[in-house]
Length: 231
Image 1: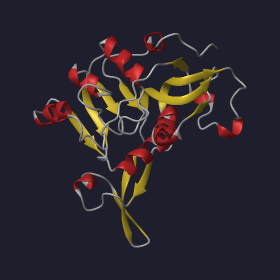
Image 2 (image 1 turned 135 degrees about the horizontal axis):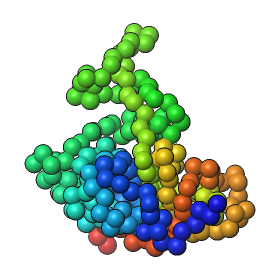
Image 3 (image 1 turned 120 degrees about the vertical axis):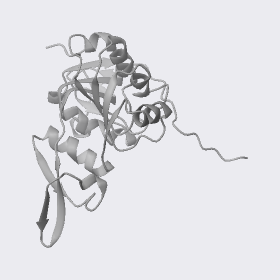
């Protein structure tokens, strides 16, 4: 099966539908699937539940889907850089399921591993714990969190081969690898696309068995917050 597609638009063809759940990789604006987010916006899909570490910024990343009001619910851990998100949430247009960052990462990892739920101490005694099952282990209280999966995972990697084996760079490795495992269908964009066998097997972070479609992209790589020091 040929996994390589010529464009992000082609890579999403036939995969989107209203009311779907989409996982998007990245950490802040680092390692986000820029091309696939734009292609997803251009499909016009509506009522999306988006699972992502963050909500992008107003005019980049998942912020583009918020601008067009295609997202009805965000499952995230950090949303502080997006005024559009804040306005829609405070007005009641947008649902939010807030997660501690480590909990979100583990929920995604668990979903990809076929684990329906796990107990964690994080959030006990806070709003995060409300309505969740509590259980004591060795005299400590834990809350039950559920694994997360998606209809579609969109991921960005540094390098991939034509079979979908992937290598990530640095911060981009925070959420992308686990998100790649948790989608019913996983579509990946890469900076470099090489032939099968060119990657060192010992350097592969995500095996191609998790990847359904792959495309070579071009990237703006916008910096979320630029901090400089005067000379």
